[in-house]
Image 1 (tube, rainbow, N blue to C red):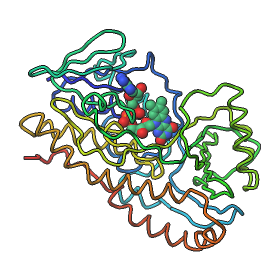
Image 2 (image 1 turned 30 degrees about the horizontal axis):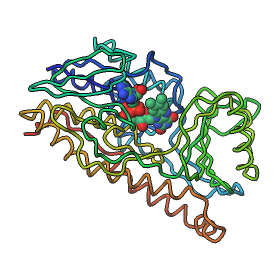
Image 3 (image 1 turned 180 degrees about the horizontal axis):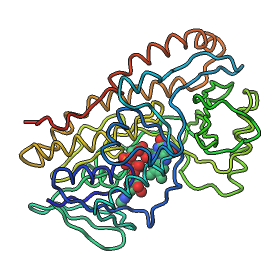
Image 4 (image 1 turned 90 degrees about the vertical axis):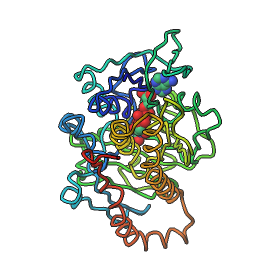
Length: 393
Ligand SMILES: Cc1cc2nc3c(=O)[nH]c(=O)nc-3n(C[C@H](O)[C@H](O)[C@H](O)COP(=O)(O)OP(=O)(O)OC[C@H]3O[C@@H](n4cnc5c(N)ncnc54)[C@H](O)[C@@H]3O)c2cc1C
């Protein structure tokens, strides 16, 4: 069988590698004209995702620059109010949560696919899909076409594949939180590098960590009613945004304001999710990763869930009699889990909006207990394993 994969982000190349394990040849079509491994900021990958990533790449390839998964929480007066310690993750789950630059993961997966002989065509923006008897054909914005036996939509949250096969599917929902973030160097300050430091600031949430290469990776979350378009900021837009962020965090503990002032780039990332999509497939076409259902990044599961999808879908295609049965089984194996994670991420996101002083008092008091309780409850998220050798029929 020949598979068409739309999108060469995180899910696309991993899906092509998973299909190769079950004897399906894939060609990846990516809208971007050329690969750009500087795009995006950083993302969390937790043990469930890392254990699958290891199937495709040597983790050393991405662990050349990362920040730890341990989290220390502070209130606006810099009082330590809780800690999530991931020390046990390695012994419990075989890997430990890290934050890595998205471009490093994207680049490593793309190169692994290329080394495995999987063709990747750039400048191919999917515009339409047809499903004549026994095949699927696609057309791209440049006028070219392609044909295959099946198509996997790995084209992210604003998926063109989803719109083509499920025109009535709900659109991604803006969660009311805007994330901005980037990279800064403050070499003159000896900042602690043992954990991500998250501050519930006076008027916004701010997090930063020092990477293994000494760079400061940071993000903040601001409640904002409307979502701006994601785009590269001009110098003047960057200056305006910095001013706004400095004003927002001016009463929060240092080095927050210095980090913002010295940032050399800032990414704007309006946070969307897709809470529920009742159908992930149609005919010979199936959606995975953010295209099928996207989660807000607050518990760092977007990439990990997309990676889980790749192995489970390949297993379904390997074991089930036909594509319809394989896609239906895939959705039934995945939906309850991803649904629960999307809801959990929304809950954490809601805790980042700024409460009144009375609520802040109780948050500071209860957070240490709450954090410990929640950390123990993450077993079902981090301990997930795909039993590749198990036959599904
Ligand atoms: C540029 C970029 C930067 C990001 N930065 C961050 C970040 O800083 N932090 C974070 O937590 N998450 C980030 N994400 C999202 C994160 O990668 C995903 O949430 C997660 O990893 C799931 O991956 P995915 O492969 O399903 O989707 P994505 O990683 O979004 O990949 C989708 C791919 O499909 C391509 N594509 C889209 N439309 C078409 C089309 N019509 N035809 C062909 N190809 C198409 C896109 O160019 C992209 O390469 C970013 C995504 C992108 C695309």
